Length: 312
Length: 269
Image (cartoon, rainbow over all chains, first blue to last red; front, top):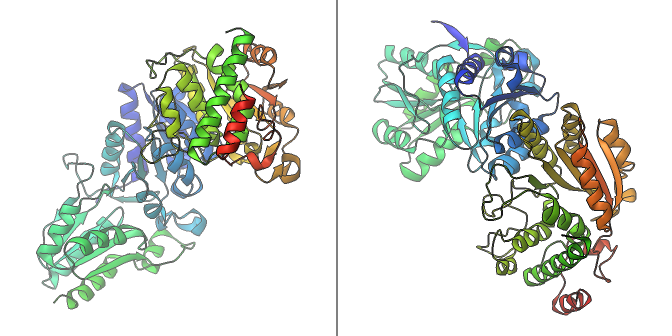
């Protein structure tokens, strides 16, 4: 399967939109090569602003540009976008409900050798508590591209979680991307794996492994963490009566928590979570870290077996 | 307005501020009163605006980065007809559009929500950058406090405004020399202010912030300056106009009770 990074889907969409929509402007904080926003800069240098190593000002300038009718995309590492500049995101952008888009690249453990300081494992928790904010977590290059285009079309603030590592391209040009709607990737009866981002590919592999053991697993891709598609989650709880969540993120405050909130309120069923648990990351090769932190298909398989034993 | 009219208008604004805070029972008189003359000159003589059409694209922009001084902004907006003057007495009450700190989703004339210090100058810089990009002659003004200059984001913004040579941006520092915990110099020294901005490529002016002649001259010079943003460092007196509040840090964030409200209003007659 072809592999491409979500950050490149983001920049490709920016360039495509930039050609027709003169209001699209892009900002970066000295990471334009890494976030890949430099591809936009090459094409439209007059609409690119490098603010230097100053993430709080990055979001402030983007806010000001949005108030003058621009559609600013602010790019930096997600640990800085969602962490260092969190209060600017909260008070300046979300409280004012400004039309600012944020591309947080290098999210998650796959950031690899840079280690814990650069591996954003808290951004779902930090962003999904913010009123007015839409949060996208695309699972592949094409979905990232669609999420970026959807972000420009939506009115209001949007945060997009992007990654450094190439991921398998699971979706097609034709796969719909509807903000706020989960995507059914595979039908199944015995259990539902609800995943986002890089873990969608692992979830599909896990479902294939489970198939061999006569366990039929449904796979849902939550590309919109906020607003969250409650219906698809409740339906899964009702029909398969067991859920496993999988994310390249802390389970506390992340997708696991978000899905649990829906399940507990509406249709309680046993639920297991795959993700980091109250832990920082560490340096290592991306794939190695996925194994080290138990984020692989086999780990999802183990969680499925556990959750099935808990079914009534 | 001529200077006598501005002085009369400023007195009205100060009366509004005292009435609002008296009715609210909480809020920030000190900085609202110290910046009243700067704000009056700006809102009544300088800003191009259409109060009946608050989203008019050609308007000059104003951002109150020191959001706790919302009363002075609300009073200016109400006196200009952005909303009915009676609404001022709903300040800080449940259901009122006049939040304790300005919310742009609630009040016509508020460009962006503020209240957490240090954030406004970045937004103003982004607006000025957007206006330049559009080759529009819109000017952007931002009022900051002197204590607020202790926030790091202010200097990120100052660096970028100088870098982009935003001569359509004017930052006004309400230099009343007091912050919540005391004298600026004693809490955390931010002086010299002018030299710091100059180092980032700004034109810096130091004026008396209660002298309308100097205030108007500074705004005029800022608007004629090319290739550089301007900072006007205005020496002011916290609580200006009310004898018992003047230069007293305790009046930073405390509303007058009924008796003191009446006393303050009497002084403003």
